[in-house]
Length: 308
Image (tube, rainbow, N blue to C red; front, side):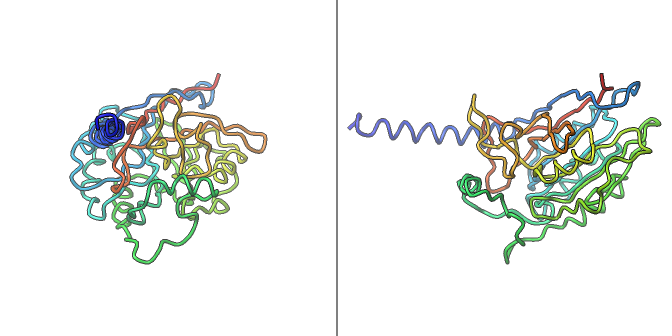
């Protein structure tokens, strides 16, 4: 009997232990990624940029709220929020309370699909099936009947009132210590709300520096930004793969970006140009899959320095 049932029971125990770790510890083990990107004009002073993404706030997530508030202690020059702030229709007050100290700094934002629509319970294995079929998430289809509409207008209004600049299919600017920073943003490509034709034309010629911002790093958006000559693109959405295999990495990106670039800094090439791409692994999860494995939640402090 011991030989017959020992192996299955051992496997079951290992899986159960892994789920307890992934949900109870790693999903709440918040980290700060620090990277340096040499993209500013010669002679420019370094800029400290805090990127937060994929918060997916659910009511009662006190540790996440405390951690987000603590990030204000980094004193960034400005904040970039790359979307998917909610995973709970009742979570707006707690989201805004958590981001309140960061909203004292200049900032810009774009939205993701989970800002507009509530999450759905779905089999995680579908992500692998969709990848094999060349499909990604909603794949541009309208949300099904019964999908909850999130109160995204309340988030937009609070961000705008704090002086953060909305970049959903539009351009915006921040002035930081006399430096003019121009931004070009897209609404979420994951649900085909992106309209690059509205913002095409490349970096603003009268700005000191320009950045492209988008929630989901679909190749069509990255190609457009890079072909137009943006030196830096910031994105989120992927959760870094969320459930990764140690020493191997992510299995999926939930978009058409390759898994080698699922998080962190990389290069993107298109139209004979090269852009730096930073994809945040984000600091939350869909409320129905509140687990992370070999991919802890994070925010990123990017130090932008002068080009060599």
